[in-house]
Image 1 (cartoon, rainbow, N blue to C red):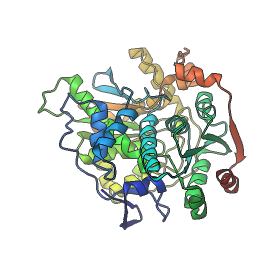
Image 2: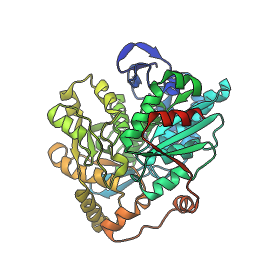
Image 3: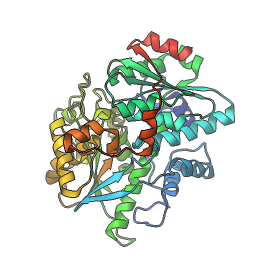
Length: 438
């Protein structure tokens, strides 16, 4: 398996090169040269395999330079927490991806990426600098995934005043090789600063610079594995016979669109996903594209589901590349809608009243979008909604919606007790460059 830039399908690179570069020299993102089929040993009708075993087999289909045995060891460490499928209502399930150390789905990709980078760096005895932009959960997942990893320094750029207090504490209190940069601007400003740094070849050479955002394939490819796992769990829970594979729709709350891209890759590999539902908040660039065929990035607007507040989603270019720019082909697989803040609160209330389940605002966007899209697309099939974060990370929104206080898990209690350590700067590239070179 080799990888190419979206703009150049003739220049192929290895997984290692794509991992370390982050983005291609032409400024575009790397994509697989082809999407492999699901490995023969992985069947969603097989109820006997463990999550790390499934993950290792899927990852081995994309990564040639690391032995299957070594990938299995990495998967055992990275996928050391459960990913349960919870039945919310008849034919409506939540895939809970928030049982890792930072209580968000991004733990999955960040932990495997850290393991892969550490493997290569240890072999080559090199030092590496990582710059990452976050709209909330990426920063904490990367911080925890890379803390004290030898040979790596991490700079996390986050928008000042636009993430939750708990998210900020998780990013800014790690210390050690993790450096928190508080940017006076939006997530899109942070993302632009990171992309500018990665395109600065002088800086890249001086720092051996890459990124751990979902624009890096090392973050995105591991996320394919939990879609395989989710369909396997659905098979187990519905009691289908081993030769009777069940198909389901999958709804993905979407911000920078890496998670939806991973789901689309899983579907292309042969995972029995019937339809993909793309759930956006008030940042409606992608729903507008599906409606009009025009992709118009714009400044992001702040919402209760802040990790999805992205006005120019980078990974959408990967989705377009997967479908070769054919809007009709995209629409045959993907339905898209948006959910506003008021609708988010209503869904949190409705779900709590019906089942006693407390949704975080991002997952609530997914559930609300499913209720909007399901009647006209697939009312008879089960739907899996990706549960992206633990509700305790958003106590203000939960309080506003439900008038209750969610108990803080141990990880969050400890983060709140630590002292914030961050460097505040304007959204100025030269300031970022000086910090990375310091």
